[in-house]
Amino acid sequence: MTATELQKTAENRAVGPLPAGHPPVSTGKIGILLVNLGTPDGTDVPSVRRYLREFLSDPRVIELNRAIWYPILYAFVLTTRPKKSGAAYAKIWNRELDESPLRTITRAQSARLAEAFADEGRVVVDWAMRYGTPSIESVVLKLAAQGCDKIVMLPLYPQYSATTTATANDKLFRALMKMRRMPAVRTAPAYHDDPVYIDALARSIESHLATLDFDPEIVITSYHGIPKPYFDKGDPYHCHCHKTTRLLRERLGWGDRRQLMLTFQSRFGAQEWLQPYTDKTIEKLAMDGVKSIAVLNPGFSADCIETLEEINVEARETFLHAGGVNFAHIPCLNDSDAGMAVIEAMARRELSGWL
Image (tube, rainbow, N blue to C red; front, side):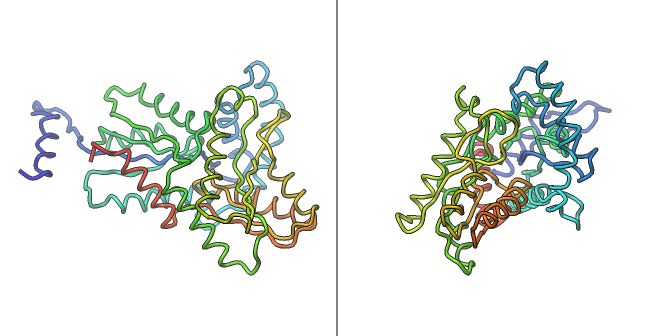
C-alpha cells in the first residue's frame, strides 16, 4: 500500500462510518497559518482608532496598570494619535488594492508558500493579523472548516518578544478555547539565529548595496524597540536582536571595511526604551560627518509603516537635514525568493512528523 493510500485509510478510520443523516465531516488536512502584527483597514481616523484601540489595549504591549493606562489611552492617545498615524499610513498606502503594504505582502507570502506545498495535496496555507483583520480566530475557524485537524502557526517575528510572538500565541490559544473540536497545534519559535534567515539577510544586503551609486560608510540594523523594563523583567528580545546583528556581521565578513551598527526605533511614551535610538543615532552620525548610510530592518518580515514611513521617510529626512548626503533603505525580505526560503524552511521544520 502506498503512503497516500495509508494516509487515506488513516483518515477514514479517524472519522469512522457516519450514521444516516450525520453532517459531512472534513478532516485529514494540515493548516499553515502565517501571522503578522496587524494593520488598520483604512487611513481614515475611525479605522486607525479601531486598530490602535485593539493594539494598545493588549496587556502584553502596554504593561501599565489598566486603571492608570486606560484613562490615558481613551482621553488622550485615541483622540490625537489616529489622525497623525492615518497621515503616516497615507504616505505608504497601497492605493491600487486600498490596503496597507503589510497586508499586501503577507497575502503574497501566503500565496507563495501555498505554491511551495501544492504537491503535498493536503496542506492548506492561510494568513492572519494579530490586530485588525483577518483575525487569528477567524482564520483558525476557517482552516478547521476546511478539514485541518492539525495547524502550525508561524509568527513572522524573527526575534522573540512577549509583545509580539507571545501575544500572537495568546490569541491562537484563546481561539482554541472556544472550539469544541479543537485541532492539534504547533507554534514556531523565534528564528533570529537560523542560518537560512541570516544568509537571506546577508544576500539581501549585498544585492541591494550593489545597486547603489554610493558606498555606505555605515549600515544600520534598526529593530523595533520595547520598553527597557520589559527587558529588565526577562524578555529575550534585546539579546535576540544583538545575536542577529552579530551573526549577520560574521556572515558578511566585512571586518573593518564597513561598520554594521544596531539601533532601536519606534519608541512610544515617556519611559526609557532599548537604546541606542535609531533617530538619535542617525542624526548624530550626520552631525559627526558621516555622509552615506544604509538602513535595514531585520526584525520585520515584511515592509510596513515602521520601515516604509518611519525609516525610509522620517529617518531619511533626519539624516539629510543633519548634514548627511546619501541614504538608502534596504527592503525587508518580504515575498522575495530569499524571504520565502526562510518561511518555507521554518514551515517544513515545524511540520516534521506531520507530513
